[in-house]
Figure 1 (tube, rainbow, N blue to C red):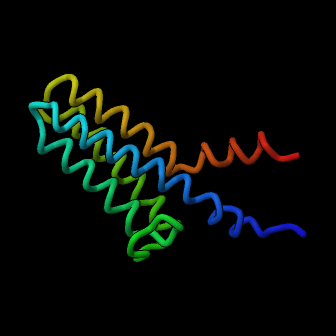
Figure 2: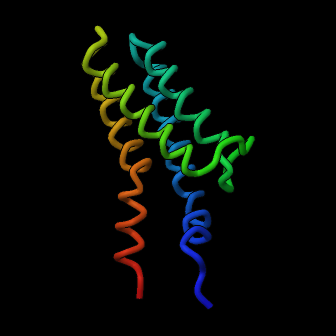
Figure 3: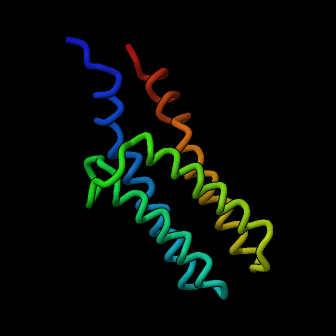
Length: 122
């Protein structure tokens, strides 16, 4: 019996949320060792709140849908890009924000999940 695409997407969304929790943890860990603690902490909080308020399996509050979550992912990634290149922060902070923004943008765009589905189908 074939599953609907929406059911398959929701079933695999927990991995997307788990990756975002790891990104938030990495940002908090970097903030603890950085001179720009506030910038990295706010970025971590934005990623964490977005992951925790989505209706996926690892969502704590389930306030937003998956589609809204992906849109917010792209917005957060865009804001991290802007902060990394326009704010007066240390170069290590810029690199950390840039790397986190790339990961969040790839997760939010769905590129990784489409690639994985295409390359694992029998």
